[in-house]
Length: 190
Image (cartoon, one colour):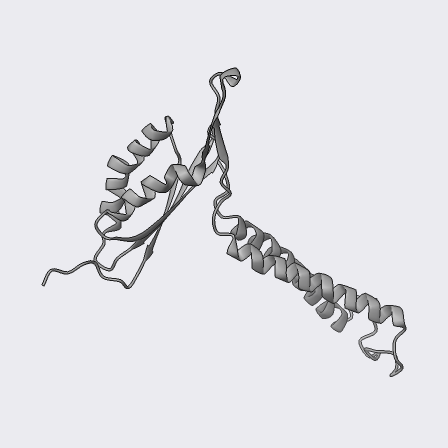
């Protein structure tokens, strides 16, 4: 199954590494303060003088700052990648007679439009990720104030998903549904 939330995995790894570095630095500082480690003298000055450091030190500091800045920028950009990657599916029964290609986004467009018509649904997005042999459907459904996620889920399992599986000629499509609640109210009769 395809990982549906790549930024979360990246966040956990980066935050875990940062936590380990900070724990190690804190442990080193505490051990040095209580003289358990004698690598650095606690009474020694932090900087051995007021002279300007060598030029190479300034270059190393600047290069380190640039690398850290680029890593932070990459981390921020990863936060924007909320959708799993989609692929183009190929249907080849007989390659000599041609092939049929179907973009995964185009395959779920009618399904998404149908989902938006369900009572209580304000907005819906669907992403079909993975290959035809191992597909995964990720749904993000915004529910109105008076919408019932249980009813939406039941109707989705009873009507929407069976039609999608039939249209794509698949026996099973694993689905991850995320419900988000909006402040928008449904249509009112006056």
